[in-house]
Amino acid sequence: MTTPDPAAPTTPVLPPAPVGVVTPTIPPGVVTPAILLDLAIVDSNIARMQDLALTAGVALRPHVKTHKSLAIGRRQIEAGAAGITAGTMGEVEAFAAAGFDDIFFAYTVFATRARVERLRRVRQVARLRVGLDSRPAAEALAAGFAGLDPLEVVIEVDCGAHRCGVPPEAAGEVGAYARSLGLLPVGAFTYPGHGDLDRDAPARASGDEIAALTTAADALRAEGIEATVLSGGSTPTSALSARRPLTEIRPGEYVYNDLGKLRVGACGPADLACFVAATVVSDAVPGQVIVDVGTKALGREGSVERGYGTAPTVAGAVLTKLNEYHGYLAIPTGVRRPAVGDVLAIAPNHVCPVVNLFDDMLVHAAGRPVGRWPIDARGHLS
Image 1 (cartoon, rainbow, N blue to C red):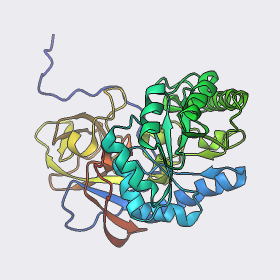
Image 2 (cartoon, rainbow, N blue to C red):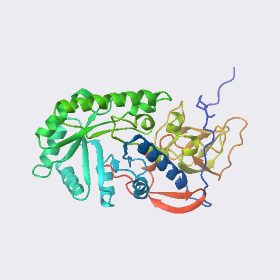
Image 3 (cartoon, helix red, strand yellow):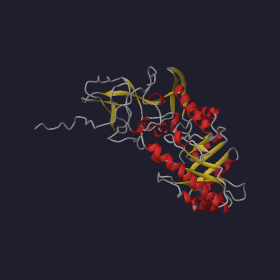
Image 4 (cartoon, one colour):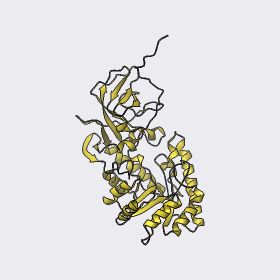
């Protein structure tokens, strides 16, 4: 009986590597790790989602958590977006300071005194809506905005992701309580986060999303509150949910896309715009190479079953393991291993946390260098 070599890399059963991904041109002498962004694909993604919203008759309010870039946000607004969605106080402030004047802070904010002061400063330069899903959150916001024009709030309801949000039928109760405190409830929003589990999940989640917002609108109306805002639509569900009763959709990842969106059918292989450049630093162990991207460049999005990213230019190559600064890239039998010093483009599973780990990105358009752009709201979490 042969004893397995404990040093040999294990190769789990992984999903097929994507076919048809347009890999970026890697600049000569690039210092890795580095984000590589194809602006031509970004613009195509922006235009496609904007056309979807326009055709459906709903507003597009993209979530800036994906790109955290003022330049990319401006391209979305110029293409026709009604405003932006932000997920942190820091994102709200960064974009408001840069002139973005219609912002939905889609988070169940608990407004401490310091946060209220920051929200009040933002509202001096931008239209601001804030999410809430509890009486304590409403009380804190109302106290902070007492004596001022009523703050617009949107009630979060749960459509099946089981993260935040009251049951849809409770939206009226929460909205009425917020109104009694002097806030201005304008509608409801939800997050169909369970729409990215598999290829059938977007359809299921979209149905849940539409049903939840329909019920929430009825519950608000029963309390005398007309829901002028019914907001939903993640990237996987947007194409299905961009219809009444929704008034707006808030996708974020569509602007760059990633392997996760590709696997559930929310984009095509040619729609991936963002990659991480990585250098092969070791080929000491047969069947794999080590690249200089680990969890501090890619985050921890992935699993043994689906891997932690792929290198599309190496047929079937999948990152099977990550340490902080090392990525274990398994090379299938019969495929030429990249050499030490080769630079590869890595497609991430989930692009949002990747972007938040870098200060800037190398931007090109169809192979032509554009420049190094800052990731303006990188961090900005609190």
